[in-house]
Amino acid sequence: MHSNEDEETERRQARRGTLTLDQVLDAFEHSKEEHVLGSRSTEAELTRLEQALGSTLPRSFRRFLTRLGGGLFFRGHEIFGTRRVMIHDIELVPDILSVCRTLEAQGVEIPQRTIPFHRARGTIHFMQLDGAPGAGRIVAIPPGEPCPSFESFLEIVVLPRLALPRP
Image (cartoon, rainbow, N blue to C red; front, top):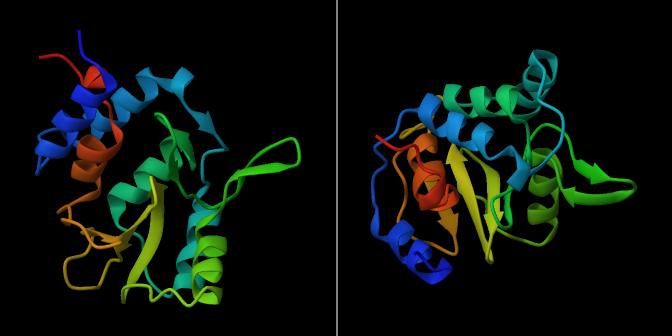
């Protein structure tokens, strides 16, 4: 039997994911009871977000938002979407543009050509936008080891080992 500590250690040892985006999304959907989700993002919302950012989102992140939306995933992983996630009048997870404004107001230097998309345990993760060198690559504040892709990040950082698909 695994303890939470063993699971966290296993998760940190991995460096590159082995699952496809579809396998990761299937695992997230299979564990829906462990998430607090907002609405899925519509194409119109994604287009407005991209216009506000002046760049397109990586395809994998777009697929995630259209399939699941933003929300609170697996024990406190906030993934920001096109809309805030609310319960009654309480904001649980902010939207991407609100996070950008908050970070700028706090004087946080956002890595160039990135958007904040994930927050957990005092770390904010940023994704390189399309058209930028290393598009889709994930970096963090405070700095940590980057992930090469969104699906690798989800598998390594967010998805608990016990939720991984079995071969």
